[in-house]
Image (cartoon, rainbow, N blue to C red):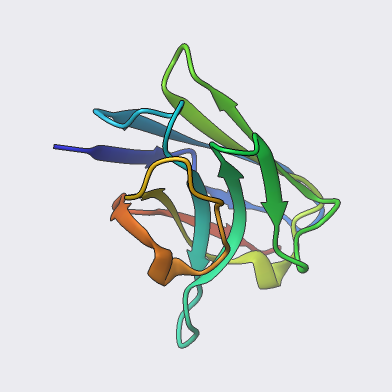
Length: 126
């Protein structure tokens, strides 16, 4: 079955950088969109960045635009999230999620995604 495994979460100071990785097994990145989401304590899960397999485009949430960058390495079946200029409000569990319908635009809505990883904790604090 599809397996998505996140890694790279850590404790980092405000203004610092971090790169998350998501290893995808049995998930075809040529046909299925994939994205990064996060959930902070007491808050709803929100879309951070998503990659559309049909348009080969990336969509970013407003709160991370210009600071976070998503990339896809299809040869390694791995998706990355480069996070720069981190802020305390970026503290959350970050999830990788895969769409269940092929060649579909990747929205930032968590409910549109079928497959989820276990998450990795990112804490931004001095």
